[in-house]
Structure formats: structure tokens, C-alpha cells
Image (cartoon, rainbow, N blue to C red):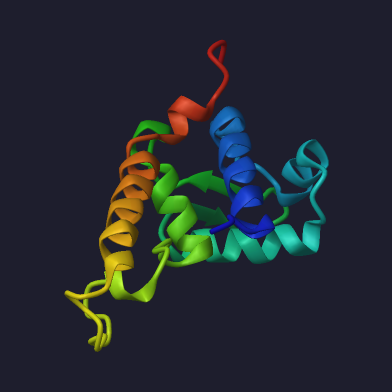
Length: 136
């Protein structure tokens, strides 16, 4: 399993917003310049993050974005699931997955379940605040 460019950029965008979030909304242009990300691609990612409830938008000439929650309330898991979907290594470990004829007899399913649990434990245990530099 690999995290896509979209997921990696989403983490960078969210950290940038956390570092620069204040009274004034942060513009797409400002983030794009600091992060060296195409403004058009960034707008797509920001749309996904907004629909997931992680960002608030401010319209108008001085518009931009704010985090919808404090950095310590947003986990890496929330960000990655918004951009990547579920991070399961195999469909058989998902809740509500179609029944596999080999379930119970498949040696791989136990490994996939452990991998999935480990992935979720890590990404849900790291907050946006923890990704910020210590001097922020």
C-alpha cells in the first residue's frame, strides 16, 4: 500500500494551514507558493478536505481557508481517509466486505487484519499538532 501524491499533499496543506491559521483566512495562492503545489491541484485537494469537514472556507477577495478544528483534534487518519479512502490492505478486513469463500481458512486474512489494525493505530494516533515543528 502506498499513499498517493494527493494524500501526501493533503498532509502538507493541513500542516501549512495549522502553522498559518489565524484571524485572516489562508489563501490557496499562499499555501501553493509555500508548498510548491499547483494551485489547481491544490484546490481539488482542499475541496475534498472541506467536504470531509476538516476545513472551513471564507469567500470573497480576502477569502481563503481555516482549519475546522484545532490541530490536536485532527488526526493523520482523518486526513488520509478523506483523500485516500479506507487504507485496508485487502478488502476482506473491511466491515461489511463481501463474504470470501476462503474466510476462516485463508492464512493471509489474519495477516491483513493485523496490518490494517497497525495502520489504523498509527495514523489515528498522530495528530496534525504532532506534525508541526516544535517551535510553532
